[in-house]
Length: 542
Image 1 (tube, one colour):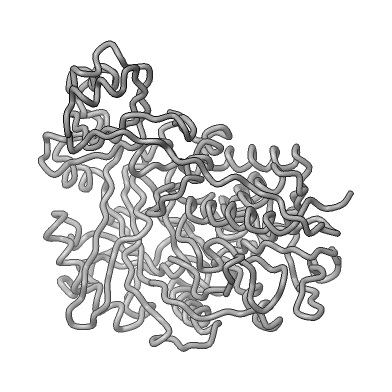
Image 2: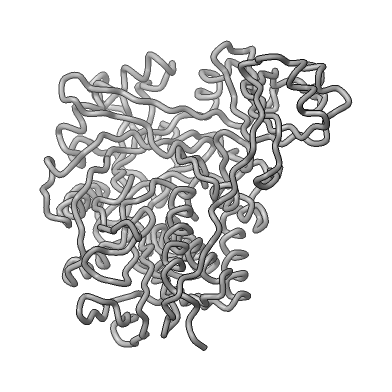
């Protein structure tokens, strides 16, 4: 539901609790709960809807609402000082201002994941006619290549789960959850709905799109960018930067072609390791940063549903249940946590280069596979792998290579039951467990593709989580290795203008630059970076 623009005062209601079984309209619910509104409501906008299942099976929706009503002052007077009701004026995003420095060439956007896509979208909307250079393929070609890889193990280094239209998020659960609050997030969400995302993303507490809807959405956004005068090129890897006097003057594409430009917005994603290496050689400011590694764990979705809801979710009109788990290890001071939990999804092969196994999770919009999966990971940092900007990449590669070798050096993944991992049982075939990784899994000791300190923390975390979700640490539960791409292993420096402090005209952005942690935060970072760039420059001269 759309929210009116700034200047329209409304009444905000928070903590409105409604049983999930209630079928009444939201307007009727408000009037029944607060009779003072009766006959005065013009519109009700659902800002947020969360599920509270703490007193299962008595599960409730918890709403935040904006209510447009006649006679606001009279209603507020009748309500008195109510802790959950107040007057509120929604905040608009700051207006986009064009700078006065003329661009001699069109701006270049590196990468067409969430950051690059939204940067290109706003640049194109404002008449800057960006050139988008994406090393991977369009989403249709890419989907075919990825599905062939999953079925046969035939891997393409430039068309895979990490590289291509939509970025890594195209093959994910499509979560749009973010902890960031920013007026432009709602504007971006409205664009996503316009291009095919379900309208519920505008108000659900934990919205998701699903990989099936994401594929259509990114194509529609690409078409709009082109309609506005932008150019989107696939199979176009930026292989070098041309720099003169610490300023960008052009980019090299695929080792041969030169494109002159003075502005490059870099949304390369967290797996563009060769681009990281090129950036480092060109003297671009970078530093190592923490991330996390671990494994994927899978359960029957019914186990998670029963634990979280106490009943079948369909009986309440709810979707597959989720979980979020954290364990603080007193012995080491490290933290283990669930990451990118995918209800009703599957574990997917997500390698971006030869010789390494990488896992991730994905689900369709319906989340109806019957299998819940999540990464369970442990934090690592420069103290574990070194302070050189590229040391985190080397650390990731080391454990991905070990997983590749354990799986048979053919992109099959090593897997082990929780019972065997914890030493509770000596022999349990993972083929008898719920698992979904393709091409195949191979029974192996996961301790051999994880640092000892990660294995040790997971050995203590699993029983702890099992006391919170019954069956979570069951002997027959399958874990698959290895999960290493939780976030970028480095951060590319930028100043208050969002520009590299060492190379003028280079704008690092998104998850690959270390400034975001998911689709929405990366999209926002791309949009805001483009807006900052436009604040300096005017449109390119024709």
